[in-house]
Amino acid sequence: MIVKMKKLTLLCTPTQQKQTLEKLRELKVVHVEHVQAPEGSELDQARNHLLYVQRAREVLTSRPDADPTGKDGDQLVDTVWKLIHKEKELKETLQALEHEHGRITPFGEFDPREIVKLNEGGLFVKLYELPVKDTPEVPDGIAISEISRDKTLIYVLAVSREEFAIPAHEVKLPDRSHSRILHHIEKTKKALEETEIEFQKYAGDKLLVEQVASNAADSVKYLEVQSGMGAEQAVAYLKGFYPVDREDDLIAAAQENGWGYQLEDVDAEDAPPTLLRNPKWVSPIKAALDMIGVVPGYKELDVSALFLIFLSIFFAFIIGDAGYGLLFIGLTLFGKLKTKGNAAAQPGLNLMMVMSAFCVIFGVLTGNYFGIRLESLPAPFQALSSSYMTGKMADGSWNSDLAAKNVMFICFSIGTIHISIAHVWNLIRKINSVACLQDLGWLCCTWMLFGVVLNMVLNIELPTWVTASQLPMLGTGIGLIVLSLVMTKSYFGLVTLALDVINNFVDIISYVRLYAVGAASLAIAQAFNGMAFPEGEAIKFTIGGALILFAGHALNIILGAMGVMVHGIRLNTLEFSSHAGVEWAGIHFNPFKKSNDNL
Image 1 (cartoon, rainbow, N blue to C red):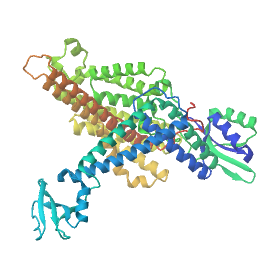
Image 2: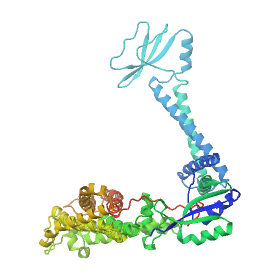
Image 3: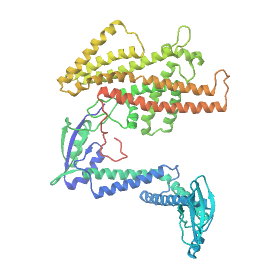
Image 4: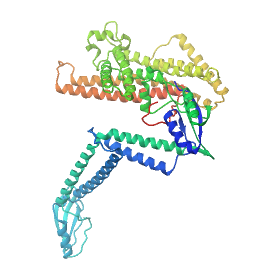
């Protein structure tokens, strides 16, 4: 459920401003909207300090845990930054040394100082790279000594008693010898190792640095709210939104602290934040919504419950394996055991538990356990499967084509129901407006197009009465849509109507992706099973076979997870949402509070 919001304008004197913001932050009820753009030198310093602390936190977070050092937080951050600068300088030095090493290695070991002395004494010595192909002609009076070569270049030492130049690339003399460069490379690498040891020593202070970063973030947020307030003569004020069920708390705080305030209902021009409060059984979907970073707009539908139900169904179809589902349940239970007391981890684990349960049910019905072929399953597992979804015939054989057709029928049915729910929901919301006729029209079109999909894709012969009613149903649907668009003056919808009908047809067909991805997953599992245990050979355990099974099924699970992200999420956030009018354009309700405070 999307919690109803109201608007707040809060007034105080400039002398009360700091105290007001502190009290308001403790209240944790107001989503502040800046009256003016937050800016100022103090805010800039706070933002820079936050970046400074966050970088130190990132560096320590990437290291394994260690024992805390007991250092002061700010002192620790400064120490880590000194190590960051030191590591950067060492890496730049190492990169330069390795480049120099690669540049002069073809010329072997020599002391550059000796060449400098020869040049100063009137004997000119230079290093050159000559191309193997089309080697330039060396002028008279120049002695050439080849030192080494590769496929494209000849590395030479050129000597003359007069200043000279060869039409080729001259290699600049290094500052030190090859052996000295190697020595400095090893010395720099050792210094980097010592720096890493220093970093690791402070890795045990991650929580302390996290707290420093949290405090820095709170300081930035506070200064943004403060500098974003408006001012009129002797009054400072801020604006924001708050949940209506916290209005009494807000009024009590205003009376206690002497604030002036104005409370207003949200109007059509406002863009309030979205605060979702759902029943406990729906709460797992929060993990999926947070992962993809979306929230419905304040004036849109809260589709959280439907999102959870249909995402679980889509997960079951895409993964489609009872064995995988049981494995996920086991891993989820282990995760819940390891994260006991960590409230932030529970929604994700609960979501995984729900989806895995659906996956097990679907896998049992389709007789899919780690890709083992139906005929190879023990009799009890075969008995649990659905004859409709496995294509089991009266003689006990399995018709895979019939099974595929039946599962695709289920996919199209789910898609039609999913889309229909969106329009029914909108129809109920708009029941007092002529706009509801548009959703009624789309319901007629959707079910008519469902029949077309079954006939065109699955070659299902529909009853005569259904076929006879298709064109009248389509005409009625389009007529209702046109009537609604004209009466609501949404004339642009008339221009795109034909395309919208085609899109409706395509949206229903797109649900076949559930079957396609699930079938591909099954084929991959069976292929790896066949590689591990070739047909016609006695099944026996081998290390190679075990590795093939592990790698193959691990890859299949990863591909399945990607399929859920791409297809399962898409069907909810695109196909369904476009029909439900949900644009996911909401703003998360983010009340003014400290980072570690919970709502």
